[in-house]
Amino acid sequence: MNEAVLITDPGDPRLEPFRRLRDRNLKSDAGLFVGEGPLTVERMLGLPGVTRSVLVVDRWADRYAEAARAGVEILTAAESLLSDIIGFAFHRGVLATGDRSYFDGRELGDLIPGAGAKATLLCVDGVTNVDNIGLLFRNAAAFACDGVVLSDSCHDPLYRKALRVSLGHVLSVPWSRASDWNAALLQLKDAGVELVAAALREEACALDDYEVPDRVALVVGQESVGVSQATLDHCDRVLRIPMAEGVDSLNVAAASAVCLHRLSRGLRR
Image 1 (tube, rainbow, N blue to C red):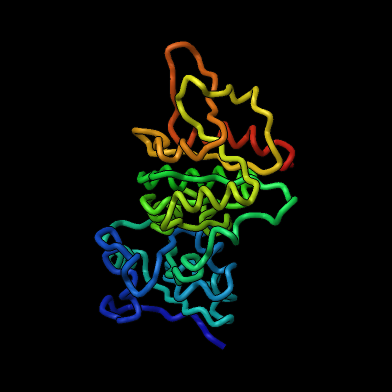
Image 2: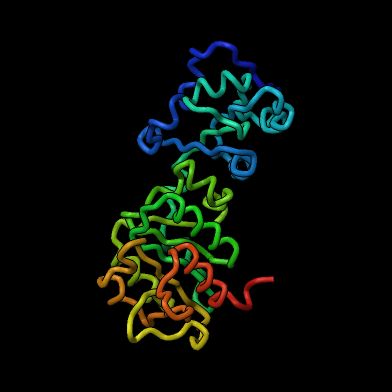
């Protein structure tokens, strides 16, 4: 039976993945990612084989006794030592390292429901803001998306802030990163998925007037320039959100929530 291990030496080598998190990019560190806070860590532990180790403030050690018995390495430390290890004042109580390969190996075809089934997907073209990436995943979860497709230039969704902002839904909503964005869009169309972009264009259809098909993917774009023209060229329709006079746009996360609420009607409780 495994038990939590109390760490008192800040030089303990088992702490290495958690050191200086503010200054590190774990994408290149042994294929790991780091999640923080109870909600994200619980989601990590719910995925078999993903969690490598957990570092938790000592007063919460009992919460992770079951994970320890299941073979996950559970390290505990005083709150002051935990903050020293990671390099900044930390008040969320728990962090965990996870194996990126669980997510990095997923293909676009794994996300698309089979022929004849309804499908709602979110395609993200070049969104580089970490908060928006997290919020897009939170929206995808809220509005019953079957998956999220990211262009290669999007911010890493497994970055710890993206995980936190998403409330851990980066771990629960299936996603894939497309190394060839044009090919990914064509694959969706070949699977009978209608591509609709949220964009400011004269030819755009008002969201409320759009007849939602059974298989649809919402395409959203980079914060400052929106959906690229190359991506728009693949889209079947362009949608606009009717707004008050003098206001022409919303933040990409807010716009996606409004659109997905419309596109997913009938799929939600």
